Length: 73
Image 1 (cartoon, one colour):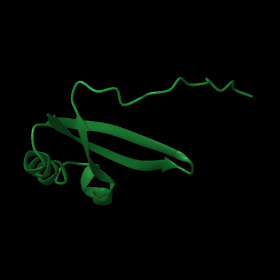
Image 2 (cartoon, rainbow, N blue to C red):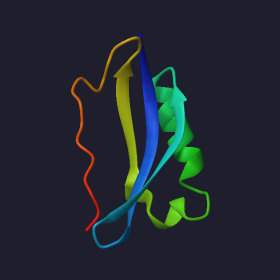
Image 3 (cartoon, rainbow, N blue to C red):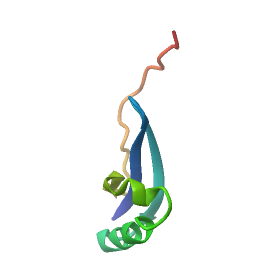
């Protein structure tokens, strides 16, 4: 089974992004309907190209490797 994540991503400073998860939906159609609602809200209407819908399979690992934390400085 798949779900559809509706995200909004926009650059706030050079090289710095702000990402918001709007919602998780059971179909592409429902995710598109949510996008159409959200695009009228303050902030989102100023950056309408920031919407992204990603399809994910449930009950599956999506991050399959470890990670290294970067140290500041």
